[in-house]
Image (cartoon, rainbow, N blue to C red; front, side, top):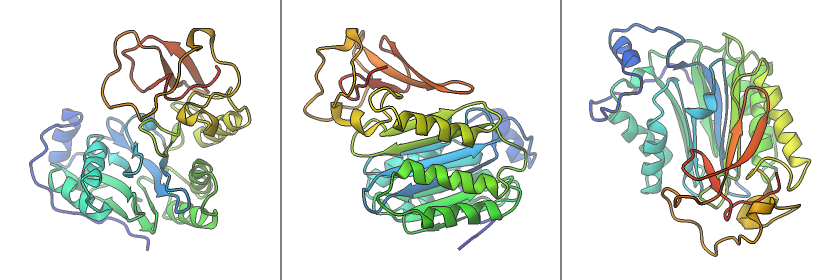
Length: 318
């Protein structure tokens, strides 16, 4: 069912303000577009056949993939947008991991949010239960829909047709097919139906399977047609097994190596168990997954970098 403009009561528990100047404006009812407003359309979903979880998102905002999608394997998927508070993503995932349903985790997170009326969220848990929220002061057109295994929402859209088209596309794609392809397909349908009323700039897709690191993590941060570019990068990676982006290929998951391994990484073996959370030891080689304005790239760097994949977790030839 398509809904728009739903709201929930919010308390004053979480005092970690994202962009305080925006929060002060929000408190006065002033919506200064272009600062931390993230006019966006997104889908969070779970594949019923594989159990994979993912989020795809597009926006007329720079680098939407840096602050909107959050996915945790065997836990859930969250998209946080509108006057975005990115801290809501990890908070909701923590609640899901503690055993809360998608709806309950969303409700509890918003209860601790200072300005829920300016937020928009999609949530799907590991059982496929879903929820979506659109604050009463989210810029129109805004709204969302959700069902078994998916939640879709958008704001500052041309019309509600974007959300309806995304839902139809996802439901028409078969369970068990590549979840990233299904999610990108939903973005394509939403863009074709109108998309963001302000234009196009960035897009991202992230999918988690069974390990701590993402199964697929691709971003287009600044591009005149970001959904088309995201599809191009994704198709290119799938078409070159072992030579695509680090960590995005089925052959690179679980430490299995295809193709040639960079000389400096040879002899490394994957761990028998999933790596523990926390920072990497100093000097440990890593693969950094990064995408620039128009194409994705991967590089071997020393440790102490963000969004890193230890080479003994996912290895592929660069």
